[in-house]
Amino acid sequence: MSDELMLEMVTPEKMVFSGKVDEVTIPGTEGEFGVLRGHEPFLTSVDIGELYYINDGKRTHYAVNTGFAEVTGSKVTVLIETAERADAIDKDRALKAKEKAETTLSQLAKEHSDYEKMRLALLRAVNRISVAEKLSQS
Image 1: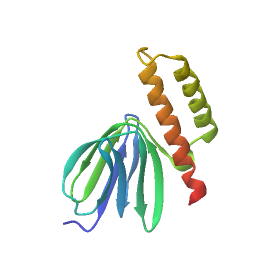
Image 2: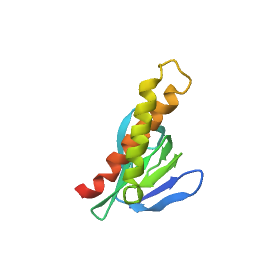
Image 3: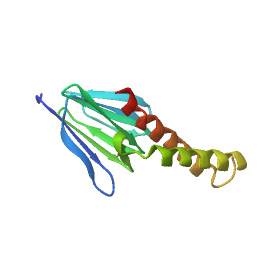
Image 4: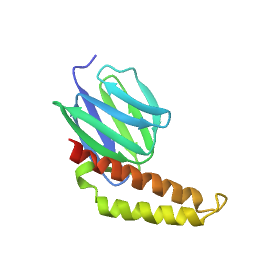
């Protein structure tokens, strides 16, 4: 068992984070899960939600989109569509995106081809707002 846990978060555009952490919590499609060093290896899908890691007692929050996570005893690799750190989120822009998605959804039938796309846009906007608000709670 390794004495440290490495976390790598990667989007199609860039390496978002790579470093040692004490623990990481990830929004899995089957529910949120936490990882400490020495965890049993597994591969799972990631859902829209809040990913955070703790290092030296400090919690760092990210709004993440869908993807996959691979866990080994000493490393967690998260491959995700997008990841935005809480202090980089433009909350006003996220609020506007939420309003736009809500308005559009209210005008679409569930059978409409854009309904699911707008539902996911709403979930992403709500998640970004929630994660951005973590800054004022810290």
